[in-house]
Length: 143
Image (cartoon, rainbow, N blue to C red; front, side):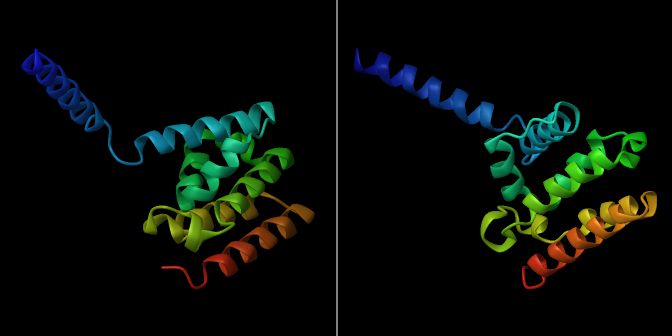
């Protein structure tokens, strides 16, 4: 009887280990971030989970934005404001909150912000500059 239970436990543990190896690290995160970005920019619904996920993901959020939002939508002031809010959340506490050290530096984020700035005009450029400055300050001493 005990060997039957041990065999079942061993099979279940083996299945858990094998299932855990199916996906690449970050793949699940990126998928979830893309879903959040899509929901926020299309349905204008921002959930508490989104905030938490953005806080923990840093520069990966910019990748999700680039992969989710079509180029044509990047000229919409509403979409740009939502993107700026998302990026602000992504770098709210980089040294403590962002899990992966590589995502603590805003490499893709700064490229995205520069692209948004060239595609916008007037007061929107000022908002983009404010977000750029905020992220630069937040990440100045992170490694």
